[in-house]
Length: 450
Image (cartoon, rainbow, N blue to C red; front, side, top):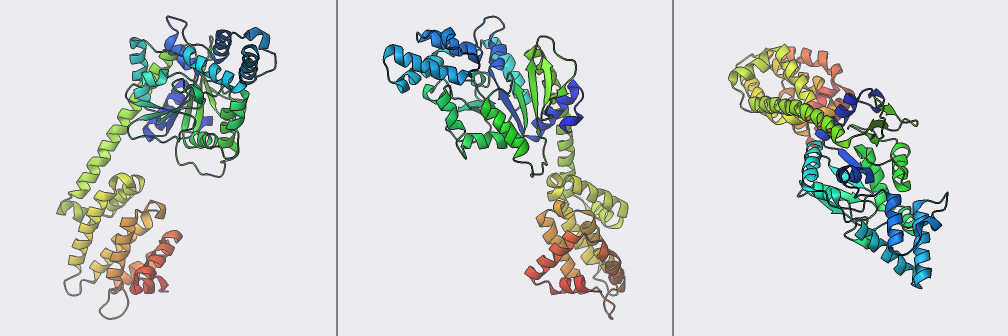
């Protein structure tokens, strides 16, 4: 599903569900999420502007005097630190450090047990592969106890097996010096080839990114979204990709809608718990279907591995059955290739035995027919390397028996001349190159045969 095809709330849930199942779902979590988790019973968590105001007052600087219209919050934070430095006759950098440490103290937020368990269930069902946050607090890590681990701004974003990395884009309270808050801090984020900026843009491009409690107001996040849409434009996506914004509002629209720039889908809500309940319900339903499909494919693969003589003969002698099976192998190649390789090997052994009797010339044609069905049915980009190698090996094995001369199979020759032109161009070139590298001279003669 493309973003432009999303028309209903259920479409949104299915779009996110498919990414969760595919394994490339990412969450971008802002202060709104922390507030939704913590503030139902008590007003604990603060939005960014209120946090800066509280911290300013905590260090003895009057926030209202410095909150100048038109200035961004990082600029105001810089003014606060300069004023603190002037008042206390301190080094400016030391004032910045104290400001960050007080921010760390003011974000000492922990969800109570009931809320932690509730949201832990939601996040476990959603199953994101990564989480990005501008929050300084560790509420997400608390919710993901035993599963989520924090990554600071200067750390590489490397996912550990079985765990969910929580990348604190603007620093984390447990390491106050890592906090990004002043204008100077933000300037460093936009240095050429800055790791976190490129990584964020690439993650957005490679994932379905769901924004929760975040309004796309941060400059480096906006830049990353712009890069993902306008810099990495030549890449072909073979995975679910797009941005969904869950936007909190007191009077949400009934249906999701495209943003004005058509770069993301906006889904309005007024209760995060209810939203996540609906989302996880769809995820579990679609995941159950996916698991049934995977079990069916596993069963098919095991059936192919353990196939008996009747199954092998059916594959060889029943053209319709063979084509149906090859079609399924094409669609689900990664999940069924091992089983099919087993069936293919057994089939080639049976066909070779059929050519052993004297004057069994039609058996060579049948042998070649099975090979040509595989070559012409399975697209080259779907042809697993092990299968391709085995098919060309067997083509070489039979090629010496194809021809118009006495002792060779005329029927196999007719099969080859009739079907040679149906070999896809990229497959043909690969067979030719592989035959040259393996010195399959008989295959090369076949390919050059007029």
